[in-house]
Image (cartoon, rainbow, N blue to C red):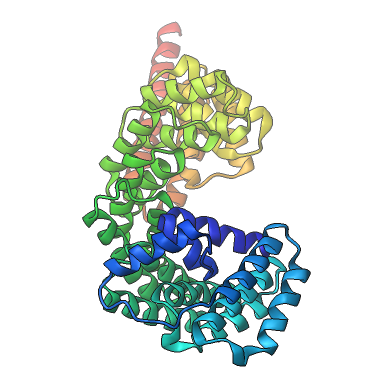
Length: 455
C-alpha cells in the first residue's frame, strides 16, 4: 500500500509541478522563504480568503514537528501534535488545519490510510479558516485516498467539489484531474463515464499544446473503446499510438483490427510497415504476415518471408509451421522447394492435409507412385472434402495404368461430392469415368484388331 501511495505522489509531482507537494500532502512548508513566496502567490489570486494568523509560538511548534518529521522520528512528532490537539482551544481554525494536516502526513508515512483520511477530513472541518491552497490540496489528497481505499463514489464526489472550488478560485486545474477521474470510473467499470473523462483530458491537453499526449492516456482510452466495441475509435487511437509511440504490439493490433473489420488491404499495409520497421520479431508475426501475403496472392513473398523466419530461428520447425511454408511454395508454383518441406512436415504429423498437398505436388512432377502413396495416406489419416484427395488418387492411378482402381476411386469421389452437393466436382468425376470407359473400349478394340491382324 505504501508503494501505491508513493506512486500516486510521483504521478502528482509529475502532473502538477511545484504545487504538487501541497496538494498531495495538504502540508505547507514553514520556512521564511516559503511563507513570503506563498503570501505573494496568494495576493495574486482572485477572491483569496482571509484566514486567522498563525502565532509565533505556534510557528515554533510547527518547526519542531517539521524537524522531527524530517528525521523520520514520527512518534516524537506525534507526541507534540497530540499535545497541541489536546489544547485545541488555544488555536484558531487555520492553526488547527495545519496541525491536522501534519497528523495526516505522519499517518500516511506510517501506512495508516484510515488515519490519514480521518485527519484530512478534520482539516476540511475548519472551513473558511484555512487557506484555499490547503483546502484544495487536502481535497485532492482525499480523493486519491478514497480511490486507493476503494471508495470510488466518494472519490468522484470529492473531485467534483475540488473542480468547482478551483473554478471559483480562478485556477486552471489542467487535464490531469480529468484523467484521474477517468481512472476512478474505469475502476467502477463505468466505461462510458471513464471514456468521457479521458476524452476530456486529452482534448484539454491538446488545447494546451501538451504534446505528445501521454502514452498511458491513449492506452486507457483504447481499452475503453475496445470494451465498448467502438472499433472505429480503437483504430483512431492506434493510429496515434503507432505514430507517437511505435511499438510492435500497436502495429500488430492495428493490423488485426483492420482484418476484423474487413479492411484487408489496410491490414496488409499495416503489417508491411511493421515489417519495414523491424517490429515483426515473433513467430506468430512471421506466420501471420506470411498468411496475409498468401491471401493477397503474393505467395512468393510469403514463402520468402516464412523461409527467412526459419533461417533466423524465429520460427520453430513444427509440422504446422512447415506446412505453412510448404503451402506458400506450392501457391508460388515452386514445386521443387515445396515437396521437401511438406515431406518434413509429414514426418512430424499425422495431419492428412499435409499428405493431400504432397499428392498434388507429386502429380505435378509425374511421380505417380509417390502420388498414390501420399493420397492413400491422406485418406487414411482423414481430410476435409475427401473427394479432392480421391480425384488426385484417381488421376495418379490412371497414369499408372490401373484403370479399374482409378474408375472405382472416381466413383467413390463422385458419391462423396454428390453428398456434399458439389456439382462441379461431381461433373469432373463423371468426365473421368466416361473417359476411362471410352479408353477401355478403345484399348479393347485396339487389342482385338491387333489379334486379328496377328492371326
